[in-house]
Figure (cartoon, rainbow, N blue to C red):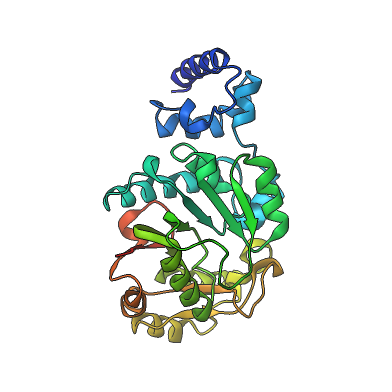
Length: 308
């Protein structure tokens, strides 16, 4: 497999050399006709094999491992592998709703962190059409320096947002609604409805039911440091929380991992299907809830909503 990728890399570097002097060269334009799998290899194992400086300048560099662990509890290929799996799933979910990523005029990466997802979406979205926002100013600056051409901005924890209405074809959030309080979540759902164009798609993830039990296992193992600190302190009454979840209640514990967020709106959250169906439909009549055991791409449930 690596030999085949190396052959493709040689061809790609030749193409970049032949296109020298073109200031509008982007990952999307350059990788037209190349597979998603090759792009993932290029961002991971293949990154150190790139010899062409112009190509390397187009590819985002990874932040240090400490930063990766702080936000994702994963590093390197594992960290990007999760983002790549989500990207493939999100692309397919959009396609089922007659939205092709490559045709999107504007896409919003909400809770962009260090640009883990933005760099993957560059395969299908021009950097000028991709926007990333986060409440953490330092991490936004890191995204700007490593994923060039994308518009990254710091925002307030709660809406309104400065973007105009009907701007985005797609808004996606990975592991954001797995943390926000009920009040913050529903305010952002309403704001996303405003910012999406008619027919636009919202894709968000939330903790699964099994995560509630996972938090109890963390406590039993006395794991409460690093990226697991928030989870170990969440849903302390496991039995009651599971009952609430099964009854369609929004389950949230206001604890912030590593102290990076305000516990008034941030913690650990599991949002059940029944809750989504009863509350999101006031904004999005077309809502689908996909359990992690159904999509099997990563360990969070997925909510897909389409603006009427």
